[in-house]
Image 1: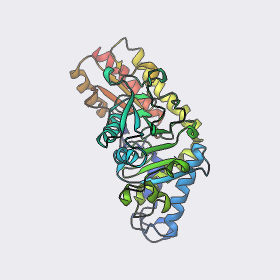
Image 2: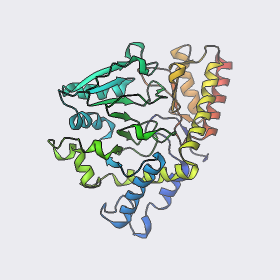
Image 3: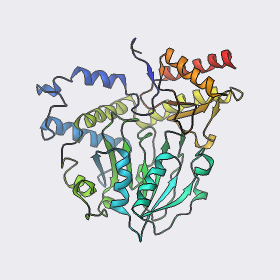
Length: 363
């Protein structure tokens, strides 16, 4: 680790590969011999077009998808997708169906409900979202416009470890915090979206990966920038896209490929997550994980300590050990270690060692 950097466990914006940051730094003033920075270059320039096209191609390659899928670059964050999805695909006759597994899936449902086109198929809200609903808990309308799931719940530290069966109902997933973190049969999804600031790049961009046939069913009776057809027809270049964010995502996905792809990412991420969960499970109750074991996230490890006073002390002392962003979300409390693709194993080992020492001193 660089001498003046910390291990960044923030949930989003999250840590990025140091190699990628150095590459961007090195070419920031003169991108691809244009004499301009990437943040100055026109989105119509051929030098940028190469970045745009390469990012799309690499994302589909990593996901194992072919020409029947489209990659779109949208703005407004995942929160805007919460509204765009029901606006484009749902109706009062065929409502969007939602699995509530955390705060962000709740917010997505609320946007659809506001439009009078949302319904709940399953929820783990009553148990404070300690698990993701299982297939047996679903009450899915076979005539629903789609089933929406949030695949990883950043706040609660839970994650889907199965792909919901939906019959003929299209499957939509918010993968903002675990996109490209492990192999998944992405072909079983009709529409995937991810705010990139958690696992793929800087804030300002949403990557949408969707079946072209599903995108063709989107409504055109909407303002221009709320139509998915606008992004499809203009290759996400109808207006100036977030060029720098796309450029950074292009570098991150190239880095993932160079590391060995999604199989290698999963291997690393499981090793990191298991290290922390082992410390929690061996602590005799000093550390208490929020998530049920069957739903534990590989990306966000959430846990409590015996008291709020100890939690405050833990967070303060962790930062002194160059372990940043460890404080949990206010709705859960405690601690949260976000261990995205770019978090090195050494960072997680440092945190695990600190947790064990902290327990010995304060247990």
